[in-house]
Image (tube, rainbow, N blue to C red; front, side, top):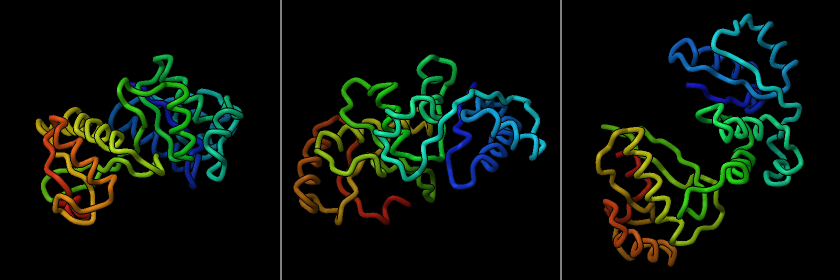
Length: 215
């Protein structure tokens, strides 16, 4: 498996990113394609004495900063380490792209370059929480400022699909994070989403409170 990795993303890049890439290859046998300015990556690899075993470099001359407007930066920096990594996925040269950089830019570039799944109106950021017996997943964790009931229902389908494929949970439970567990609690968005999810065919268990994420 080959994974594209943004060597320039994150507060401690590229040092910690390169160390992580080397560790991923050593521990999991994953081949990592590092995206970013080749001269900078080569310089840090040499300083850290990291061998090129399982690593390769895809040169991208530009870097998107954390403070840049996501959509504008993606359109203006077509040769950035983020856009380049997603181009590798689009061309089938990498199975996935990972970045610790500007999450808005990653999301914008993914939508522009890869498109959306049929039937899904908005992408979502997924966050995994460890629980007492397994794991739970929270969607959306920051990709969308405002949502519609249809978005929340679609997040339910995406989250359930992820839990099935990645965590092998045969029938994942789906819930709405609200300010109370009772049906009828929450905003109009929550109430309308509740009705959609109840009729969705998912294993919908209703509303939950924040503490329930860890249960």
